[in-house]
Length: 383
Image 1: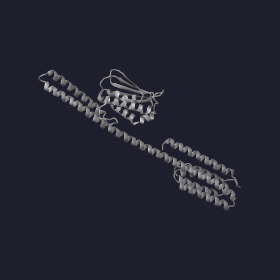
Image 2: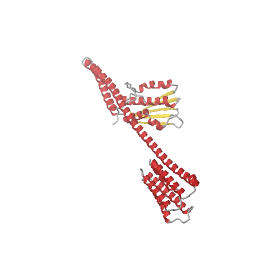
Image 3: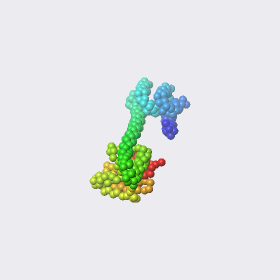
Image 4: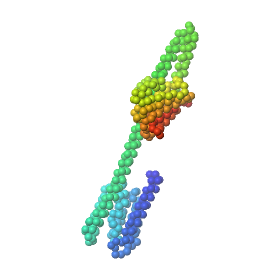
């Protein structure tokens, strides 16, 4: 338990001890029905009842038993009446709160029986004893026991909710790990296709160079230049891809990129949403891993627009810069709960993939309505 909680509990117990001291002390001083003034011993019992409130959390059963014995001894010594339930109310509550419901109930019943029998044997009015004293004391004791048990039940319920939340968090982490593994397998397949294609190109041009080496040296040289360029591109793609070995969420093995942007926009337009695509800078061929990542970001953002936004229009902006591609997808829909958005698998997938490339993702809701996804995709190989 942390220090602020300890201090808070100590303050509560101290306040409760002062309250018991004042209430019991006032009852002793009032000396209702007594013929002799109370002695210092009676006030000593009130101090004992108060001090016990400071240890009720650590020893709830012990506190209840000591309080009960002290209360019986108090009345055996014929001190002024102080009631039955008030001195033991906090002790009964603490025992029930700590799960000792049977002990608390048993002590309460025993005190009521002993007190009632003793009052009747001393000649007190049965109507007063049974009609007022017994019912009021029994009602107060039952109330504090029930309150303690309900607090214990609520604490247990909260603990169970916390346990379920932790279990759900662990499950989410396992699911994220599983998706990352699937992503790596997907990129491995993409890399396989890329290498197979590039290797075929190299093989073809080296064959051409071999066959034309004597008859057409210029053609052979051009073929070798193409093969050398393909080798360089393949090595670059291999290094970049291996450093960011992840995958998207489907099983399509095709390498997709921004050259297929129109195919992404078609279903959005077919849904009746006005789509605008804007390009800044000079479009150029991107590294395969960066191109695929940009494609996936746009794809997921547009999927969210279709599923969740209720938008009437959406704008896709591509900014080609020297070292990065800036993406911005904005709509005029209802916006989104950013806490929920950050927890969605699509947002997580986009953010993780960009992070592995050294990029970043930002999602936000506009004040005037709508949702914005902004991403920066590095184009240079990360060191």
